[in-house]
Length: 481
Image (tube, rainbow, N blue to C red; front, side, top):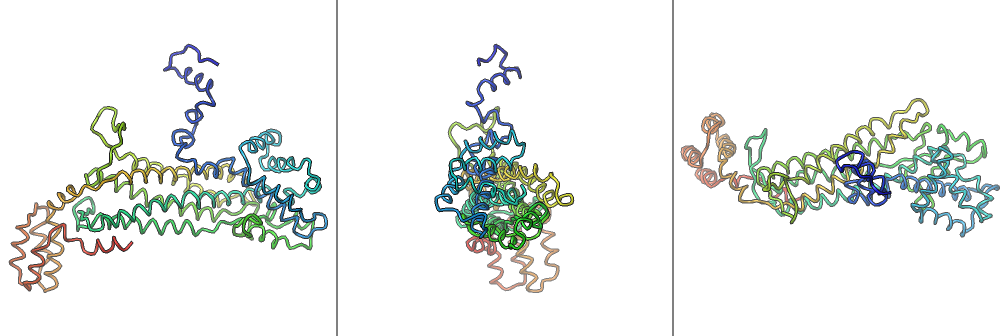
């Protein structure tokens, strides 16, 4: 189809142009920036959290349950041969985009996504008498949520363990490198936006590192729960078929046994039709907490760039402003902050909404759960942007020293503290009179120090002190992380 002769500024031109080239420009026509502008940055997450990834895990759960049933000792379902097991496991291992499309085609008829997966698996039994004979044991005694909740847990485990946590580990490794490299580089701190006791660049980075490592550990510690107990959590259908069989123990074994014999998850013994999603709320809250730490850090680095404490390495061809040629903007930290905020908005809604379900189940969780990948996508994108920004930073020690040289008032704290040690009356008030709201020079402080009735050794120590040397244990603390 050729584009009609329409002005390129017309919305009609845009629609016609995109419709004429749907396969050549898939990202440009995407509704979400995660699958459009930022698609390349999210390629590790897409196979896990996409609808295809969801289908893949559903196939895995159905196959695992089917094979486990064959080993349960039922006279009606003999153990599968090794060849049949390998064939079934290959359906999982080799699951492809073509397979996902085939399932979607079945869903056009069923209007039920889980049933479409069941029918697709049964369709793969054609020409295999052993499997055809046992076909009715596919999805046996299961409600859709038995398949869905386990699939979501598998997706979350893969997304957390292979994408989110490694990305956070990369950030913490970079922060540790910076904390050590800048451990002894003094920096004027600011409380309430005003000059305060000096610190070091490395120590301030170490503060973030310690917080982030604890947050990442909390993410990693969340147990991913799953249930396979039927329509309302009581094994009703299971027991109607084999009343004497211990279905609870069987379900627990399937859920907790390592892959591929089981799913490698944690067993949830109590549920309504859906797994309660409390663990999801715990996980999403933990991710949001890590993100909040990184929002705080992104804003601080943005401020330090604004103060000139950090320079940003230039990249040939990049433009900072369409009208101001000199600009080198901290865009990576701004991008990280924005996407962390989007991630947290979704994560907080997920954490608040998912544990709530009317009676034994309503469907409001289903559509919300389809946005887990979106929330994790914004977080992943933010982590990538933050790493890019950190790798561009260069410390500007001259600018750091300049601010320290103009902040002699911060030495009022150590002087009045030493005066208090020796019982000098009104120590705080005397320093307040000399320094508060005034431009303080070294000479002003030295004059006061020389007039103090304290041991000479302490006078000498105070006289030798500068804003740059008054950093306490900052360097030691930075190197300790």
